[in-house]
Image 1 (cartoon, rainbow, N blue to C red):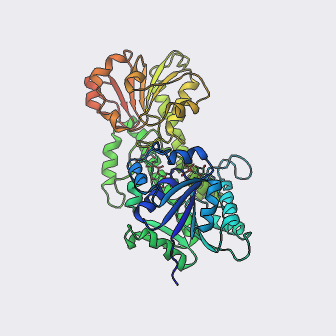
Image 2: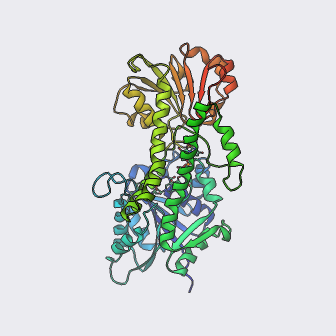
Image 3: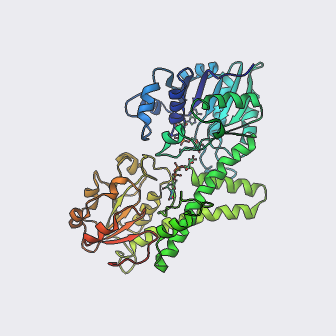
Length: 459
Ligand code: NAD
Ligand code: UGA
């Protein structure tokens, strides 16, 4: 008899678990969806009007499904829902290990293992366990061995269903995915999960592979995306010294249909919780199989990104540092702290690296962001010298330099003619995202330096 998933549970109510389950519940009113998390504060926020994740469109999806067939519960209450579930998604964090074997590179699977133990303890009958978290290839073996400790008569099958959503566009990505990937060993389990996605995803976009290919494909997809950013960022430095314009170069290169135009925006560097950790995981896996050249190849994508962030901070410092290179007494306005626009997420944000480097040279910073809370900014810095500004205007007051670090659309329309007088005379504006209206900035009599653009007429 074909399997049918009527009740599902998801462990982990984060940036992936919350939005993904909300969209499934929205699209499948007949499926009962429970999301559980150890973090009681997060669960309370999911049950409130002030959701813990900012994503365009998310609030509407949650409000349609919550209280109907979608619920967010704490871990203790969640046990009964896991027991009743036909399928349990694991959507917890898989950060880079900070200690033990592989520290600094390998994925830390302790949260996933703890979920597997929780499922082994509470599941009843037959349950499909679905890896939604990004895992190292062959991680399913480790989950299987933990599930094998369950009571007699309780059985499991494992699927890998990695998530490809990007923050800021999560709802659109979930509702109109390029592809859904389901890796597994038993066709009936793959078909049962595919049946859920089929409610809104065309069949040809639901790809099925073996378990190991699915696990590895997710790491490789992120590695390829990060590689494009590092590739264009390497060229941004070359453009700056040669007088070429990286946007023009990217447009020409991207017009080749074999290359494509997306993901070629030069920037202050890539950030976010996943690109670096997934690259490091791929590097660690390659090293552990003795593939040193493969590891070195991907390591360069990480190294170039670190270099780009340092390079950008040093460009901000150069015109205002004293003879000894110090920025003491200098105030720098930081416009944007999230790792990209339309999210409140600051994990691995390039803004942090840039800010830390400027602080280390003695600068004081005034940080503005449209969605990152002041507490979130302050919690990232142990050091003094960081003020959180409520508006871009407040951040700019008395600034010796300005850095645009997140591409919030509202920064693109700032009225520089009005704002120019707030800056110190001679202040340079560094656009780390190439979103400012260069003409408007220059007409206001200000000096603009854009990432990947050679010397400009009034510079
Ligand atoms: P997150 O940190 O936002 O959320 C993870 C949640 O899991 C947290 O709320 C945490 O409290 C909870 N948790 C941890 N251990 C638990 C346990 N044993 N029981 C119950 N809850 C537990 O992480 P995220 O950004 O949602 O990422 C989750 C996974 O998805 C990661 O593997 C990540 O690589 C992958 N991923 C993330 C994104 C993204 O855009 N953030 C996109 C695709 C894939
Ligand atoms: C990325 C992938 O795009 C998702 O497919 C994947 O599911 C997710 O990682 C994950 O596994 O976590 P995300 O990190 O949310 O999504 O956001 P991206 O749009 O990929 O941006 C990542 C970083 O690269 C950001 O800092 C962004 O500003 C930067 N970027 C992106 C550039 O600097 N230039 C570009 O052209 C594109």
